[in-house]
Length: 436
Ligand code: HAM
Image 1 (cartoon, rainbow, N blue to C red):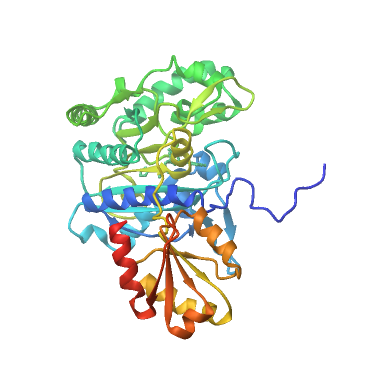
Image 2 (spheres, rainbow, N blue to C red):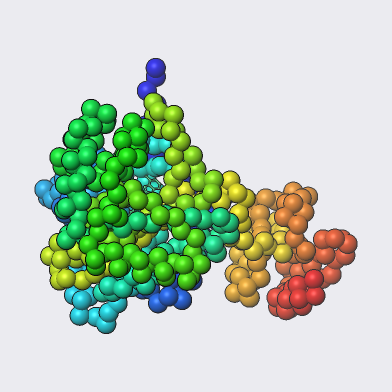
């Protein structure tokens, strides 16, 4: 088979053309508005960081670090990676800028592109966007609930109907080691019923087995002991309190005792948010049909310290923007509305064309949204364009008008034309647009 032309976007990466931009805009607008209301400050971190940051932060035995990192050596010999997620970069920035001495909690949010070398399929790309919210310096389960509520609210603002929050607690460094032992004791005799990756995971990171999407591993998982039955008092109380907050806030949740998330840093709360009818994806070679999470997050009370900072509790989450957009399209949810131009400028001849540039600028400054076709000469073509755009008025600037310092205003529905002085055109248009 002929090799695919290199002059294409890399596999799993996409151009975002004009028709998709209003979806992005709608999402960024909702994110900014809610972030502002809840007093989150925006942070932008570099697209590349030292690979070590993710090895330490995301975790050496996670799929992201083991299989999906775009890691490379710079010409100077630095080992960098394109960011596969935001959280470790934001924690690094928290430590680097001494944010533990800022008034707590420190609430940060961001959005932008991330990179994971995934097997591209519906809802899974190699370059994708997330919006991400993180809160540092708060222990209380109320904050976990608030983070969940923020993501839930953003999706509601985007007009998603039925949403379900899946929640679980995976304990902390007090109680999880014991649960891990219980889990390993359960998995070991069943290791030959697991995929090759999971057989390895039993030794390296047994909780990951619960996260595996292979059908045979899911069958074993469904019988496995549940972490929730092995929580210490502190984690139990925290989880109970979280559920009470979710009840009180009328957030519909479902307890998933096997939800562990694919990242190593979580303690206590983990959650994901799904929409009914989330993109369905077939697992290769298996019949299982998976829903894809729109949002994933949780608490990570030990990560700041692990990365060299102080003992600062934290909680956060991130949402996949492309997955949200795919569902918005599927459900025909509205994108951002671009204000349509109400006026068209048609010009005839060299001199009028030259005068048009300045006139367009005056109209822009007056906030009159105007369309034009400066590359065209024929009046018929330009009026046809104006008709297609369904503008209310067309300005016609011909040779004679330029010499007389006037311009013609044509009302498109009646064809009525009126000539006005050039210096009056902005005011004349404003008046007419106010009336129409
Ligand atoms: P995550 O579950 O890896 O969590 O990603 C969060 C969301 O990003 C997913 O639910 C999904 O919607 C989207 N996503 C992930 N991978 C892809 C992909 N390859 N293509 C398209 N969308 C994708 C994190 O990234 C954590 N940093 C979240 C977090 C923040 N936890 C605490 N704070």
